[in-house]
Each structure stands twice: as structure tokens, then as C-alpha cells.
Image (cartoon, rainbow, N blue to C red; front, side):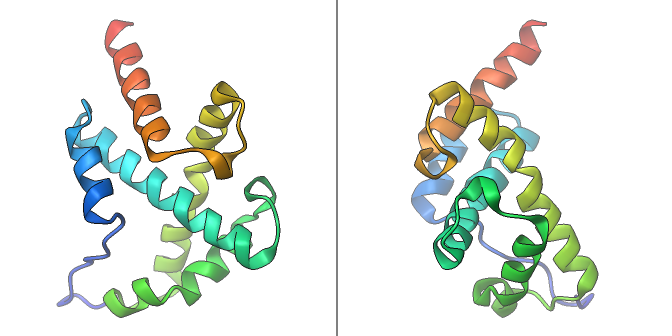
Length: 130
């Protein structure tokens, strides 16, 4: 990445971003929700490309996908450390996605944006109450 070029990757489309902004979450929780929604979409694309379930996707497959993602390439000068960082963000989103999947009794591929936001709101409320 170059120092004079800020990272401006748009994770969400305007409708998704509006839903996140309307959620009753802190700034940090909204960031995590955005990353999780982006990861859900990215993992779905990897799943479709590879013909495998999201649950089977490995960190190496995520890193390979990040390196090939044209949207990111257009906005960020990538190096190995960025690929690792960004891949780790996507992979770490599997934890809440697995929890949402278990609670909803649906595969990760069937989780909706609304379910992601509801889960983050419940978790935020639970943390406040304890």
C-alpha cells in the first residue's frame, strides 16, 4: 500500500450500509457487522467459484480470492501483509457466521443481512446487561 493513497474499499452497497447505520450498535460493532456482511458475500462468491460449502473454505482459499478481487485491486495497492490482514478479517468473520448459522439452524450461505445485524444487536445488548 502506498502512504499517499488512503484505503477506500467499499465493503457494502448503499442499502446494506444504511441498514448497518440504522442498527443499534457502537461504531466498533458497526465495523464488525460491516466486515461480517462483506465476508458473507465474499465467502459466498468463493463457495460458488470453488463448488464447495462455505464451511469448507480454508484461509488459503480466502487469501487467494483476496489477491484476485478486482474491486480491492482497483482501490488498494496490495502487498503480502495487506492480503494476510484482509484475509484474516474475512476468516475471523466465520465465528459470528457459524454462531448465527447454529442459532438459525440454517447453513451460512442462507444467512441474511438482517440476521447478521440482529445477532450483533443481541450480542451488544447481552454485553451491556452483564
